[in-house]
Image (cartoon, rainbow, N blue to C red; front, side, top):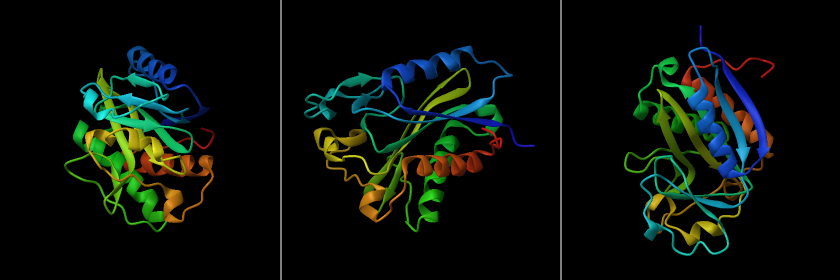
Length: 210
């Protein structure tokens, strides 16, 4: 029987408060704590990963910059970006860290295929790409054998802040969104469909009342 996965729909929430809540959840959880997906979007914010290098922040301007404990370099979050935070116990999934990253990427790729979009992952740069443009970013932290942070899919957010950074540490990396690929989806619909695809890739069951 697949393990159960709880889905929480948190709406538009502050990045730093949500990050601290994820970390506290992970530190408190025990073997009986069910794993969760949190569906959110954030007000405009740049986030730096643990190894983030300051030279990749070109001109942040009035958008706040928060140093986080996830992996990876700098990225941007804002309204119109579907974020799924993955609070999982790796032992439940049977996956190592690299395989977990691949499962999350493939969940996004599954959703895009469902929408008629051909997408792929890259071995040299985690995330999901359409042609050469990045449409979804990914960053994780593993603590006590559990993951937090997760994946961010560009739905219809303003892409101009990406010009103020080297996205994920790559200069001149093109970034795209579903709206530019002719896909119109409501935020909640996109988030629910992505959660379903991720759960399937990870081997979880989402209860009907979740």
